[in-house]
Amino acid sequence: MAFSQFGDKFTQHTGISHLMEDMGAGLRTPGTIMLGGGNPAQIPAINNYFQQLQQMHNEGKLSEALCNYDGPRGWPVTAQNTALTNGSQSAFFYLFNLFAGRRADGGKKRVLFPLAPEYLGDADAGLDEGLFVSRRPVQIPHRFLPSAAA
Image (tube, rainbow, N blue to C red):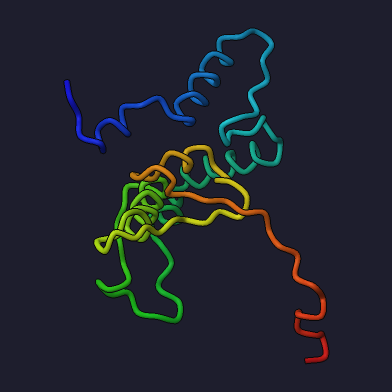
């Protein structure tokens, strides 16, 4: 089957799919301690927190705490500054590709990461090749920094 460029991009093997395969293989390897993919090892303080969440659930308070966002702080919520997405990963996909990539005038804008994408899944989130660029931070000489007295 012949896909569009978009289809070709999203049917390729990606960095995140490699990571998921490696993690899946790790789960089937005896003695493996899983520390990757954003899921840390069991931490007693976190386990305690989950138990507190379970207690809130049992008391009927968990939905109230998790399912109601705080109200706006300092600016009104309007159609001009609100977007609904199915999660942060897709939200960043939309933002990256909304503001970067090939332009109607033939130019190209890119997303600047300080060193590299922090999350492996972000590396493949651009529709255009080369959407992301990374640069090492430049140390600003002290003479150009505002003084503490200023």
